[in-house]
Length: 343
Ligand SMILES: [Zn+2]
Ligand SMILES: [Zn+2]
Image (cartoon, rainbow, N blue to C red; front, side, top):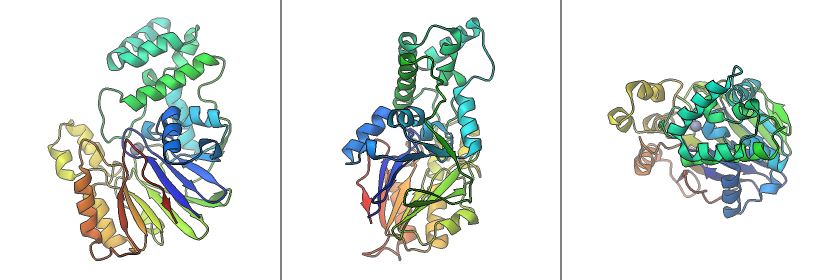
């Protein structure tokens, strides 16, 4: 039996569990550890049964609960070396700063996030170094380009607070320490337990972003979100899938007419941004083989999309292919886990 449970999907956090009879993998940890555990329990998944965390790329909506979750559960993190380096850079200020500079940074983050700063004050250690090291917001988090807001969202604050509280409890620990790190390379398959994993490169504005194909017990699951367009190398990977999780990020007109500055609109629409409803539909109509039992639309923008627009666009593309056996269409949600897909 192979199972996929989408715990969250969208620019405020992404996380999915792929499991076989003996192995359970958390794909991205984009929610705080506390929220991940809450959603796993609500979805009938056992947090302590997780074997590994697998990361697509270092943007905050994919990693913000990674370190705390890995440390709490004592499980390895699989990612590419450039992704790991980029995350460590994000967690660690490039240069040693003076106390005065640190105060300036705190003021800046106070304007962004009054709650988390208050939490920081209580929780942070004594030395300057500790203070600067446990302040990911001041270090400048790398965000996915969709749904950019000036304010950190609730999940971002929760994750930062959690990390700071954990650091305060054991200030000697390096916030970037992980129980174990396993590097993989895009294009080189590997195994975690009885699940075969094939990472493939996706076009996105991160250090070394990947999508994944999972195979176990003859079942094939593909996850492809955070991609600016559908290149042929990705399209090839999405063939013969039983479950296809595909980005349907934005409606082009809503994005174009929406409130974002032009530079952000350009970034989202670029070849390294996010897949629009139209681009997802074009792939489903022309590039996809029609064989998946389930198609899950994912990473929907809350500002530049509506679930119904994404659904209608995909349904239209799949119109002639929907059957009793194939292409059950589901929409991944930001604020709650989807019911598990069992194959
Ligand atoms: Zn991203
Ligand atoms: Zn993302």
